[in-house]
Image: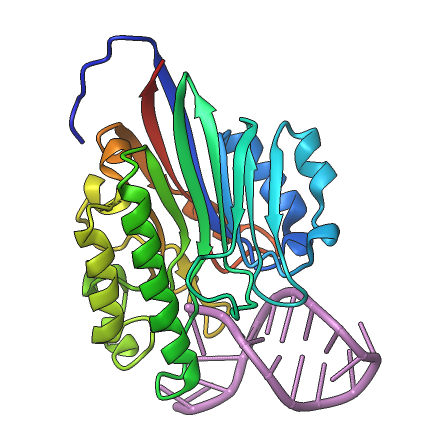
Length: 274
DNA sequence: ATGGCTACGTTGCGTAGA
């Protein structure tokens, strides 16, 4: 993480992403985490409800503005923000026939500058020999095209979400278990590397190349107890955001709570300037 | 030991997740 000159006042902004696996099942756990972590911008995935069923008031009472792009039963993304929304954009461009609620982007003003923040839920894609994997790759290509357009704006921009991508063997406790899986196939890795190659920085890997940094542990087979995890939730930062990265982390402890999500939050601190 | 768990909605048990 590089130090940049700071001519004005430092304005710390904490951003985070969390696949909550049903927001209605997770309200109290999310509120408790918000009180501890105190993030400014939070990308949520797998809210699993329509917009009107999102427990909006609970988060507004905690001091957050709420943007929701949901659907019945599956998928669904949302953004919580202490800052008001200047723009809200739903759906990833590139396929008007795509009905799945997997992308939401907002623009907020922080200290006289703009911060663009997106919550994304990239398709799982299993099993790989089906239309599900073709949809994953096609969605990924749309994301790459959108990221390219956004990077041209030269703004602090964070693509936050559940990518359903294990980037490297260091991101899984047992990489052999994932060979041939949609989260770990060469075509999946190629897309993730293409995204990074546009100039987006994986916040966690900018800070550490340690193994054992995971964001998901399956409910099954005692995966949590055995620490059989994978790192699939990522904060991808534009150069203007990556240059201002001061700290980041994974809030692993919430996986041990009663009735947890199978994913945990990933957060990053950006030192913006006013 | 290739199943184990959790959530959804059609409240049964099939579908989906990763």
